Length: 174
Ligand code: HEC
Image (cartoon, rainbow, N blue to C red; front, side, top):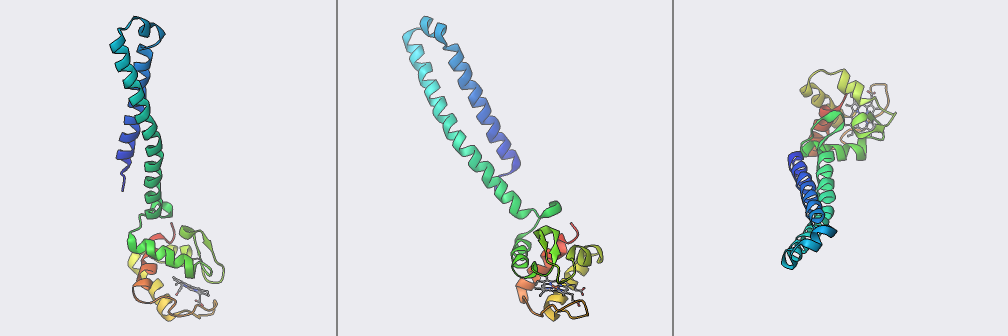
């Protein structure tokens, strides 16, 4: 939404404006005011008032913009700096809702102990992204009962299963 560069430019503009108002106010200090003709002092009075109003508006806008920027920033970046697309962000939601109770995964800060730690079982054990996704998809569609406990089949189907698998494949081990 807001790029980092835009935020920096807005903040810099704000600082420059603040300095501008400060210097106009200094120039117009007690001595300047006494010697300046009446019209000029009214004009600079107006400049200062306008400057203060604009500064105040910026003071409200800048934190709002930075917060909006941060919000956007956080939802799309998983742990370890992995960038998540819309499907993977949806997958993260779904994972937290259903899978996190049984599985540990650093990216969702989940610590489930019933099933294997997915950072290890998916992240470290499988080397390719395609292989990771395939393993997660198969676990979701078939379920698992290979002696390490019970994982029910079909907790998700179709697109939801795909999104969860994309997400886990992208973040496991990070
Ligand atoms: C009720 C607890 C439980 C839930 C909920 C659960 N799992 Fe599991 N999961 C397990 C257990 C237990 C195993 C290991 C079973 C075995 O291999 O005997 C496992 C295994 C796995 C494996 C490894 C499969 C393999 O072949 O090594 C993956 C990947 C996995 N789960 C992903 C998920 C995902 C994604 C979800 C959410 C849709 C999920 N699990 C929900 C308990 C659960």
